[in-house]
Amino acid sequence: MIYETRTAVKWFDDGELHFALGIEDTFVPQSRAGERAIDEYELTDHYNQVETDLSLAVDVGAEFLRWGVPWYRVAPEPGRWDWSWVDRAMDQFRRLGLKPIVDLLHYGTPLWLADQFANPDYPHHVAEFGVRFAERYGDVATDYTPVNEPMVHALFSGEYAYWPPYYDGPTGLAHIATSLARGLVLTQQGIAQALGKRASFVHVDAGMRYVGDVDAPEHRDTVARLRHQSFLVEDLVTGNVGGDHPLLRQLGEAGVTDAQLAWFESNAVHPDVMGVNYYPLHSTEVFEAGVHHGGGFADSRPFFDAGADGLAEVLRSYAQRYGAPVMLTETCVTGSVDERLAWMDESVSALHRLKSEGLPVVGFTWWPLFDMYEWTYRHSTGPKRDHLLTMGLFDLVEMPDGRLIRDRNPVADRFHQHATAAVPQSTPA
View 1 (cartoon, rainbow, N blue to C red):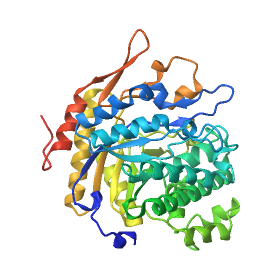
View 2: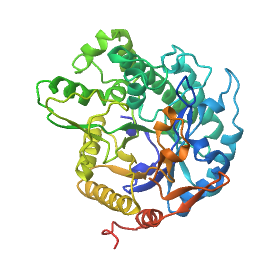
View 3: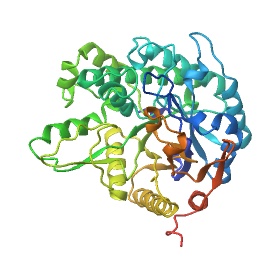
């Protein structure tokens, strides 16, 4: 295991529960008829307010910030790199002493990359991007997420035909998943070579759970596939899709060759920390006997709020499956301040409890720092305010002149209390 090669203790080895925030960083710059591009940094005015936004994270006690890079803006043309805005951001990380966990790919490719994730050269392009970033900012950025939620990428772009390149079905899913996995491997290998033992890798995927009438004859096979499929990209990159993998037949029927799988086994990379994104209101899907739901963003199944029990289940499953420390890399509820406070207290308490039971939980991340705009904006013609999601420690308030201000709410105070507590505390009054 890679842990045996370290000569220095990393932050995730110190036995503490570290507190992080994130800034929503979805980038889907491609559009077609009936669609708008999504750039959350543009929608939330983060490009203009980056310095003060990073300061907000420090003010509320965050040690880490999960923060993404707009690849399509950094690489506006093949072979041309524009790091000017990223330089601003990384200079502020240095000044503040805030530690970035860099989301190199949080959806979306450059506009010039035909077929996006399906492009045969995609893995090499994304790896070059990652290595160039690490070489330029390796003095301050040593923790990397090569691809955020690769299985969500694969589903939206490969099975649901919802995002570019609009592939669908099991063949599309397999094609996009293997391409993303290869890009992740090459990115991690390149950064590890560039930074040596200073580099750490936080792999991140979405916790997915399925409950209800899962044993109904019409659902049994689907549920079995989905439960294995949620781990597919991470299984690929860690070289664990071998002869006994439950999805081997499905991958073969979709055109994935033995040679491709052998490449992953020979080039396996592993997470230093396995990040899991869990949303209590959305991470557990419900199957109902006699009812067909296609699944997917546009035709989702009903959801069940599994609360802290669901959170504990997904963290345990990832820790056991990959033998790495686990981190809650995204969580929140969209709702009132009281609802957000309740879930923050419940989820932080759950992590402390899991640590006391011996599970290697190393971090908690509230996502996002300030409110964001729902992905439904992409298929709408209405103003962005119609798609505002109240999720953050700071409310986004649109002024009459269009400016967006960040208005601190009580969730920020509660986060600060949790993040700066020397020992686990009971739920604040």
